[in-house]
Amino acid sequence: MSQQHSADPAPNSAVATVADRRDWWRDAVIYQVYPRSFADSNGDGMGDLAGVRSRLPYLRDLGVDAVWLSPFYASPQADAGYDVADYRAVDPMFGNLLDADALIREAHGLGLRIIVDLVPNHSSDQHEWFKRALAEGPGSPLRERYHFRPGKGADGELPPNDWESVFGGPAWTRVTEPDGTPGEWYLHLFAPEQPDFDWNHPAVGDEFRSVLRFWLDMGVDGFRIDVAHGLVKAEGLPDLGSHEQLKLLGNDATPFFDQDGVHEIYREWRTVLDEYSGDRIFVAEAWTPTVERTADYVRPDELHQAFNFQYLSTHWDAEDLHACIDRTLDAMRPVGAPATWVLSNHDVTRHATRFANPAGLGTQLRVAGDRELGLRRARAATLLMLALPGSAYLYQGEELGLPDVVDLPDEVRQDPAYFRGAGQDGFRDGCRVPIPWSRTGSSYGFGSGGSWLPQPPGWGGLSVEAQTGVAGSTLELYRSALAVRGERADLGAGDRVEWLRAPEGVLAFRRGAFTCTTNTRGETVTVPAHGRVLLASAEVAVTDGGEVLLPADATVWWTTD
Image 1 (cartoon, rainbow, N blue to C red):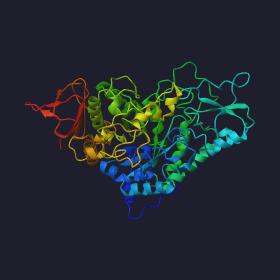
Image 2 (tube, one colour):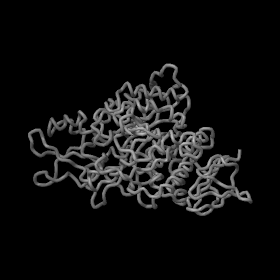
Image 3 (cartoon, helix red, strand yellow):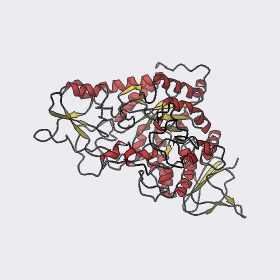
């Protein structure tokens, strides 16, 4: 029998209540916190763990089940913390390990679980292993833990292969050796400050199993695995050949993403996690060509959840959404994993702005579009998402209806892809602007010392303070939706929906006594009533014949009980 581990609960906490709900993750609503933009406790303009901790009651009252924290580890911040120098330390800008411990314990005391980011594809170039690999020169055993290779050409002046970075430019950087001469090249699928680990080396696996145990012993409830599809590269690192600029979500197979070898790593990780009590989980950020490939990551002996990026990138169109929902549920059912649904995160334009623009522009937009249209669709899309079986992810500030800040001055941008020309996702700063808590103040309640990215005028009108208690506000819509979802066993649970006949451009499905109807058309439609209205993203009206006038871009929830 495997050994069971558990962190000591905080005195007088509700940890036992949290731990009692088995398989909580199958229908959980998980809220992503981007720590540097959530709440600033010390007035330095940068969010921190103490700030997150101070806002935990807000998240409990919002009605979420768990909080996923983007990286807060020691890092030079070349890519907002996704370049980790020490996986067992908190970066001073966010606090220290005592702050992390207090946050975990207080969250548990409030009935919230904590999921932390893990970045196993690459480290920072300031990681001790990489620094030693450079200092020791060619032949150093430390270089075997990364992908160091001699260059091509007469003097090794060309990269080892034709791979490109996701952020633009070559995926290889040549080093200057200790004697001052140009030397080997190292692989980085992202920024040059993020050298990729070579997972063929046993020390890499040993290290990350140790890192898992470190945070599990601290009491975290799970891990979101960054670039979960990228750890293993094809043997020999073969050329990619003719191709367009690399995209994270593409339809073509590559020798560096979604290789079958990643699954053995996650089977090993699962044995570690299963030693611990408390129903802890792994969540994969796996950008795969199809949702069927995504399902491979959540087989019973591997990970628990995987983000559904196909759903995130689906247009606001009833037919497309219907197809994506069916395909997702059909793919997850054979492996017994829950579907996941997500509309926004820290890497894509907020959906209130994506939906404000014409379809087909992708997930990174640079124009504001029709703000009223975008918010109307975003509210409807949220109710649709929360009505589907499985687990849902919310990104901080979407409950306020925040748009992307598309007009940030060039001089304030910090996304590393922005400075690398042809790279994708160079405008991610727009979804990372610190969120507003109050109507006024130097940073609308984010902190007392301004914010690391400038907040736009009028941000206070979208704040938590401005929307709390206001009937019809987006915040109150989210609170009501999450309360209803938490009260009803027919929401979240299960793995299928019963589709109902509906007019063109309208989605309607039943789950037990519950029915969801979504109008994706730009005009009001007449639909049948399916009981009494539980909640709607916009005002609905009943006709003389007992049917309902469902406004453009709106969702309504019904019940017959």
